[in-house]
Length: 245
Image 1 (cartoon, one colour):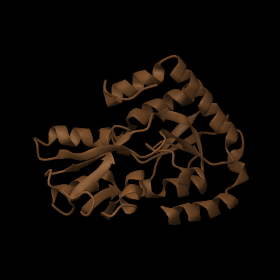
Image 2 (cartoon, rainbow, N blue to C red):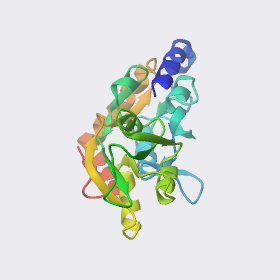
Image 3 (cartoon, rainbow, N blue to C red):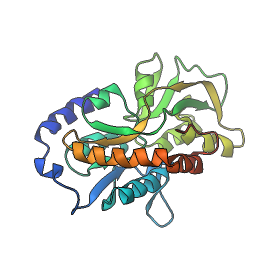
Image 4 (spheres, helix red, strand yellow):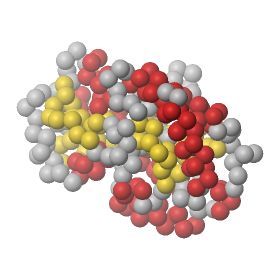
């Protein structure tokens, strides 16, 4: 992650000023991973779907913006935002101090998401074992800073497959992402250890130069919080136990 931060910081110095022009007549491109349900995924029609797709479309409608979706690997989301592949990130991205040094964030659209571990047995050494996490995530950073061995994968699904194949001792990810796997596993996967809060909430990421665009999305997010529309979406996609505003 630190290498990514240094690289994207350098790119920020040369990012095109033309991309900061008015978005009134050009499409605002929203970058997402499309591999992290229920936040974002590809549906049976081959389209971006999920909580963030529905939220992003609503924000653009309220802000009277023409928007289009762009898919991108999770590990290069920030670098490709800075280089101009899209104008904002909506990919379940948590605000961290390290990321905030490189890009700007809107106000949050989800409270801090709890992270959790799953394994196939309760007798797992979370402090000294091999723990799988998706590359470039706050969970990967957490494991890297611990005494456990971090095993990184490009997608969260690959980390689950590694656990299923016995390649790692446990997986750490957002609890909301892991919950369906546990519920559908017939007892094969179980939650182990304690849930942990690792960041400050989930928000849209933008280039520092796009202050006007950030303010536009902030206004739309504020309105959705005030009229309850954001809470309705969170409950729809994450269930009645989800944290809301």
